[in-house]
Every structure is written in C-alpha cells, then in structure tokens.
Length: 204
Ligand SMILES: C[S@@+](CC[C@H](N)C(=O)[O-])C[C@H]1O[C@@H](n2cnc3c(N)ncnc32)[C@H](O)[C@@H]1O
Picture 1 (cartoon, rainbow, N blue to C red):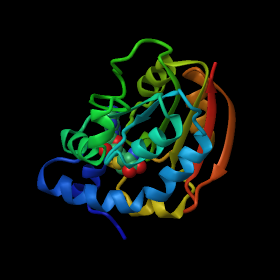
Picture 2: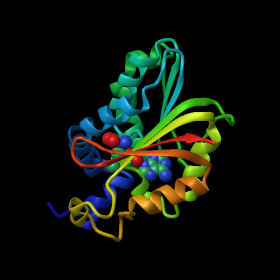
Picture 3: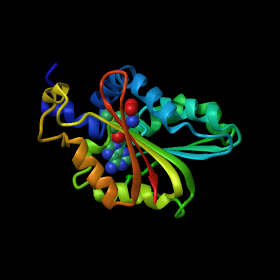
Picture 4: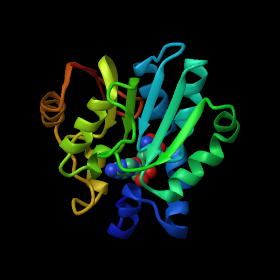
C-alpha cells in the first residue's frame, strides 16, 4: 500500500498521536525481521548488545533472553519510541538487564569498543548520508564484534510504496561499499522471511 509522505515521515521519527499509531502498526510489521536479525546476530551469554533505532524495543527482551547476565541497550532518537521501548521492557530495565537511550545513532553515548554485537532493522533509509551512523556503530563495537543490518534493498518491489523524499533505498552493493568504508568486513547476505536483506559483518 502506497504511503503518503506525512505517514512515511513517521517511520523515521515517530511523533505525537500519529507517531503512536504508526508505532503500533510497526510493532506488528517488523516482528519477523527482528527475529531473523537476532538469529543471525546470535549473541552469546554475557555479551553487551546494541539495537540501533530500536523502535518499540520488542527485540530487546529477546536479546536479553540470549545474553543472560550481559546487557542489552536500545537506542532511538524518537521520544515516542523510547517511551514505548521502556514500557515494553519495564521489568528488564528495573533488573538492570536492558537500557533504553533516547539519542541519535550518529552520536552514541558509549565508550569505544563497548559492545560485542549490534543490530539495526529498517533504519538505514533514514541515514542520509549513512556514513556518520555506520562509523559510530563501528566505533562502539569491539574489533571482531558482529553487526547485522536488516533492510529492503532498492531492487525490492515493496520499496515503491515509500516516497523517495523520505526513504533512501540503496542497492546491496551500495550498502556493502558504505559498510566497508566505515570499518566493517566479512560480509554475508541472506534473505529475511519477507524478502528483506540481512547483512552480517564484523568490525575490523
Ligand atoms: C522503521 S522504524 C524500525 C524500528 C525497529 N528497528 C523495528 O524493526 O521495529 C525506524 C526507527 O529508527 C529510529 N531512527 C531513525 N533514525 C534514527 C537515528 N538517526 N537515530 C536513532 N534512531 C533513529 C526511528 O525513530 C524509528 O523508531
């Protein structure tokens, strides 16, 4: 279904009542690809894991179940989404196993090399240019740390539903070249359950 521009904009930065409405649809639409990304990331017991642009933060509790005594952090620049992610992970936050930070992905408030693994689902379309965001994710990952990026590539027919004024869709080759120039290597691709692309890479 073709999205008008004012709805599409909410995907990149949900705000107000319309943002809350779009967020509830997003929660249903992105569950499967988040499961795919977590399976690909395959975090280990004790890992520190980052989800960039976590949205509703549904991923966070599934990541927390995998890392046990480790720590899971979700970041999002939308206060509406941070509120929803906090509500969806209330007990885990109280227990100190999950944190939600309301911040932009080009300025992450973490030490260099803090995380063992990072993922980001349906976010890179809003990063234009993408380099400051990918470099910042690479900075906070330890060398050898794993990164999974899930996205629809420009060859996916579903992308025609989204206005180019809001969404920047890129080819798989463009995404790999961007990631390569930002400190990632060892690229592996696979399809998600709804034909999205999952790119796995490691921090150089
Ligand atoms: C389409 S939603 C996807 C949310 C979630 N990853 C999912 O799969 O359901 C994109 C999310 O990324 C967030 N986002 C986009 N650009 C961001 C940025 N530069 N920094 C932090 N969050 C960002 C938006 O606020 C929104 O919550």
